[in-house]
Image (cartoon, rainbow, N blue to C red):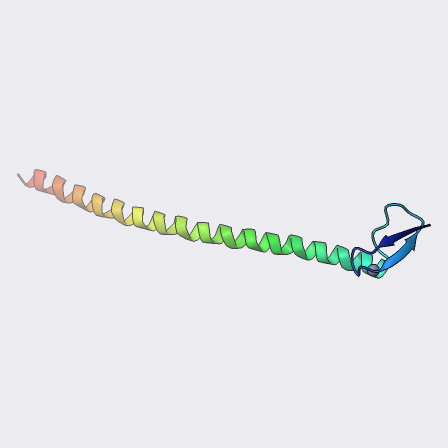
Length: 85
Ligand SMILES: [Zn+2]
């Protein structure tokens, strides 16, 4: 028997196993849920960052689109002037 400290509740507990981290199945499950939640939070953060980048990229594309439209209009105007001459 070994006295260990539970990773979840911090209580001392006796364990036959050297690698036991939790005093009870409830603490083991709770730790597992917590870990899962952390992963979910990280994923949400990543999605938020990506959405921000996407909206920045969309803004840039929109600007370039307007610039292209303006330039296209300019080219049309210039070529019409040439035809008229
Ligand atoms: Zn515990």
